Image (cartoon, rainbow, N blue to C red; front, top):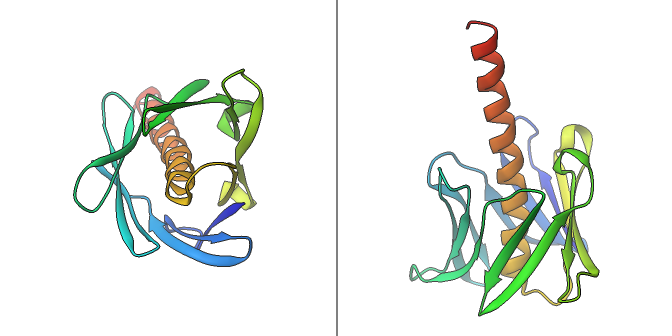
Length: 159
């Protein structure tokens, strides 16, 4: 099980541990680069597509390792010709459930902690890089929703 925790709550830098052992770190960024992380000596880049809301996991050589469609109540991650469906299982995107081919739950990604500054991912049968990618995608989605809500609130208040 992966556990991501903000290293300093106002920042967007997360430290990821697997079963209590430090695994990697990443910072959520603005723009096309959603995050960068290094895992087992390999560098990865999470690239976001601003208007479509989809994300890609790129290897160090720029090849696509995995991709998601737009994050909504249900979404999919595609990797190595395999399609992995996810479905929102808690209000406000606090939890997503990974489903198997029959639609049965087999894993979860859950935002936890004070002000949702932590997240856990229990995604069996997925490569660790794909687990980190799925975790980053959910955290990026939450940040995107909060930013758009702030813009709407500012426009409604006339500011």
